[in-house]
Length: 287
Image (tube, rainbow, N blue to C red; front, side, top):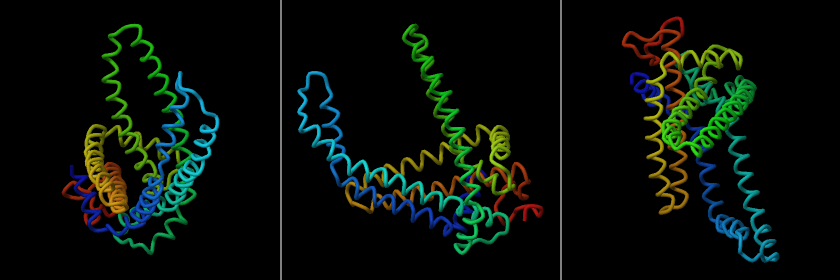
């Protein structure tokens, strides 16, 4: 738990570095709230119900439903595109500012543009690497799922096996999320290429596997509970709930980045005298 404790210490000292993340998530939250004022879900349900067997098809109504869905679908695509665009601006700068805070003990929002310029292309290459790994993992998971689904239909004993497999999927997802944050952190800290950093990420996670999984799941569960609470608030107080959800998401992202920095620095560059890697106790060779 020392890494998690140090990550929160780091957040208390450098909370202002999370402001760009907070702004992006707040913008997306507010735009999502505006989008959900439209009854596109009702339109979609009516559109899908029209394909049910035995339901008479009204061509005029079908055309009306389809035309009514186009603006909402377009807005969703624009929202997703905006979220992606803002993230490829904010994430490399945030990683860079956090790295500067750990490596020098000083960082401010004035470092945003220099760190963005320094890490932007590196982040694009990283995303391409994530896409490639994601495709490979998705294919493997899909094949395993199909095989066990077919076997469960032939023999009921395989249905029991599906439960631990689902648990493995959950653990795998958590490990993937940790690996995502650590992978790019290592690229920045050690100035490594995409696949060299991926290899190092695998070795670090393997050396500290179960504590990483447990702590990451704890952070994720706390974030999920907070998100549910803010989600309920969005029904009571429009826009405020979405903004608070953005705050929760920003804090979660920042804590996860700080957490993987703590783990990686301690496992590869040595920790402070009390076993932590908080900036006040970083070893001289890392300073």
